[in-house]
Length: 253
Image 1 (cartoon, rainbow, N blue to C red):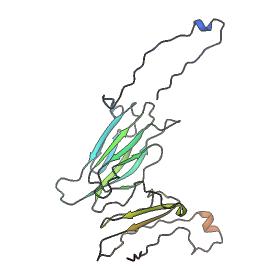
Image 2: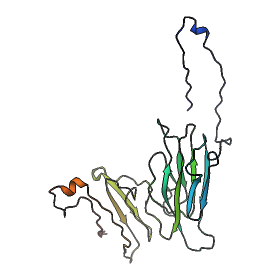
Image 3: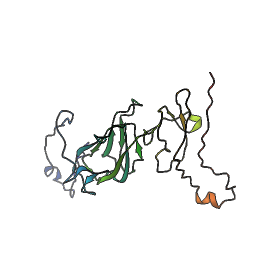
Image 4: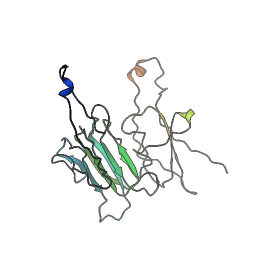
């Protein structure tokens, strides 16, 4: 959308004779024509070892900037590895009225055919991304009135895929007011919604494996903090409102 503004000066009796303009305009379809202006003045998406960033950071983008970088595992590593991405600095901003800019992640999942694209927009740092993708493309797009200054992120590879870590999960039953995720991978990584940020909700994960197997849970990092008012109140400190519960679900056939 392009907004045009006409500013009128001092009102005069013959003002109508002093106002007039003409122009032509044309819509360019970027689906068929190249609209890329790069990623700003000297700004390109670069990587160094395990870091990926727009460079120089921070710097202003040009209108309608577009660039991308592909993250692939080491060619000499025969293991099945999954991409992990963590944003350390995220300066993709709205222009004061709406958000035109975005960072998009694309990949192909061996476990979830719907998990092919993750889009993050303005002002909020994306959560930790533990994907089920062996390769990832990071795409930066900006609009006409971009005020964004780029990002810095760290990437690595994991032998375990994430089970909706950083990926939008679906709402469970309305009466539960929370999320429920089903994990069917033989091994994986779980994290609370929007980890490492705090999300005030009730979430549950159901881990299902094959017959004649059992599940081992390791490497638990638990960060549950009560509000100051709750700590100073007369509520029994043993009755913490935030908790993690791991239990066996019995299924009868």
